[in-house]
Amino acid sequence: MPPESQESVPMEEAQEQAEESSLTSKIKENRGFLIGILVAMAFMGLCMFPIFLYLIFRSAGEGILGREAATPFPTNLAEVLPVQTPIVMGIDDTGTISTTVDIPATLTLNGRSFTVQPQLIPGDGGVWLPDVESDSVAWVYGTVINYVFGLPDTDDNQTLLDLLGSGDEFEMETHEGVSYTFAFESKEVVMATDREIYSQQSPGATIILTGGEKEERLVVRGRYVVPNETGDNLQPNTCQIGETCQVGNMQITAVGTAYDPGQATAPTGFAFYRIDYQIENVGSGVIDTNNVHFSLTDELGNQYALNPMASQSGNYPVLSGPLNVGQVLQATAGYQVPASLESGTVQWLISDLSTGAEIRMVIDYGGGNAIEETSISLLGATITDDQSSLLMDGNITNLGTQQVVVTQQDLALRTGDGASFLLLATNPELPWTIPPGGTLQFFVRYQNPQAETAVFTVLNQSFQLNFVR
Image (cartoon, rainbow, N blue to C red; front, side, top):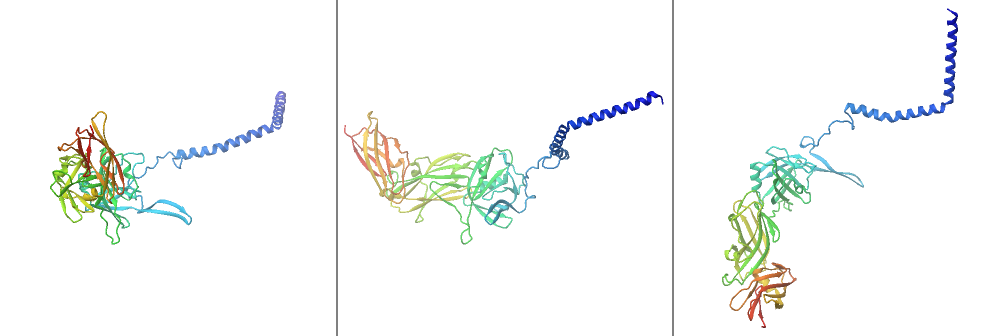
């Protein structure tokens, strides 16, 4: 080897040793700085580890962080729910309480039985459109106070619900064999988006005619019938004045009564007894009111037919003609009764001759006794400054045990020649209802009779007025 080459190798080795010695000295001088870098890198590694795991699971599509599509709530629960499923859980001093729901199995309407399929309603406020067979009925899962059912909207089912009326009952049986009976309560048409029909405020059952894209739905409601001691079911087929009664596809409310013995058209010894009421068609078809029958029965069993003259003397027209879907009318039913009739109550029987549905309304009957047990006083009578009107005020006190109702027919202003004068205003508005033991102060305004004398009559009690000119 040439001498130059032999000399160059030791020189390179010496140079490398010098560089290593320089690097070692630098590391020793900056030992604290390097330790800080290593610690920072270790901390960053710990922070990146969860992200690394997330990316692994994300790519695999597993775990709670996966991107797999969420499983929707089932719309048919028959296959995924056991017969009894806990729906309410709580804790008391002794441990955990679990309440289970006994799922309905069948619903029977007018002898026709439907298999019940549990389903859920949409939680977004949308329209409930259950998917069931024509011989099945959907049940809103969890409705155990007011059982809500969805019946497919078919012609047969429409007819079935239309035929339900007052006095009818339907039954539900659960998977555990428990039977519940519901008495028909009402029938109405509601918007398909109405959520109030799912309310769980009172025991009963609600049947909805569902399906299609109709904006309105027929809804039938039933009251839960509590079994009596003998095991029979009570049939709530009676109601009282002021309550709304269901008769077939009609809802009827009696709003007032009047006993009128002073009508000239009534035969001697008889009086007119009138009932003012409101009637509404809640069905899906026009009602022929000629098929609606009204009769009155007293406590002795005497029956009274509708009297045209008594009805025409009332506050409202006589019911006649067609009653359209959703239409509401006010009408008067009048009867001719003995003026001496003594009866604590009367029963007003309302029948739909086309369906056979009927209801009995129990009404307190005051008759002539109501008038005899009132104290009426006239406090003042003045003519207005413009001479156009007669103003009167007075009191009516009910001394009896039955409420007294005063209608426009119970008020009159006449002169000796038989002329009657127009009632312009009253305060309070008619009819006036005075409870037992109560006193009513009234104000009336009549057309000025322009006479020297006149007679003002309230409930058949007369007051003679003498005008000073």
